[in-house]
Length: 314
Image (cartoon, rainbow, N blue to C red; front, side, top):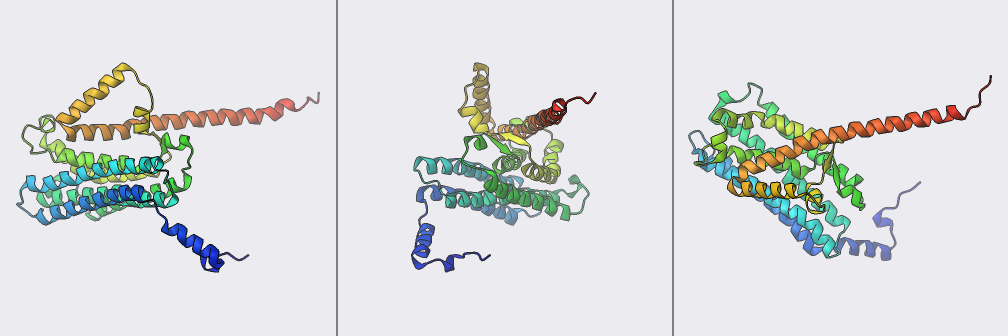
């Protein structure tokens, strides 16, 4: 059995295939490329932080660049949320756009958060090596690598399993990469308030508790990576909030959360993103256990059905 390659096609069909490759959606692609560009800027800011992160360097100057990089990742999430909507509004949803979106997510939500976490741990070890766990430095590389590799697997699986069915977009199979990146960047933004005057986080947390963010960052990267490739179902947050009706207390709580975010956005981001992962994981595991129990009941009923249909020999 021989396979047909593009070069084996007739000249007319070959020209049509090449023409389809040249026809790409412009506006949605520009929005997706904005995601990649902002992710690149985040990496550039971390590189600038590396240049300044020398012994005796001002803490505020270095963490300011880390904070800017974290903000850029959240800006990239806006581009990631808009490109699909723009494609549907302009009727330009194509496989090319889907592949470009996955490549952009791999850069911004796969590489950038791992790079931020790794550099933060290295810089903190250089400033105060006694506050880190006494483990081999290569384990920090391994933690960041686990996050990046799991993000690649998560995005590849999403491309294969997701269809145009609306049910596939109401929940995620495994932690989505933007949510994992939001947890890392939210914790880093929270750490950047360690020496901020008048910060609510500084009033709530002690310097030792701020140090827990850095010491726990390698474990956070590993756990988030494993959750990305898991089968735990996570709700689509925007779909659940905007496309469904809720009670008045829910609306009041959402308004209160927005006000808190306006006052202390670093603390709000850290709490919301971490809470989404913790609560979503707990609810997802409960749902998986309930579904497994229902499947076992159905299998038991199917197994018993033939026994009822067999006549007695007595």
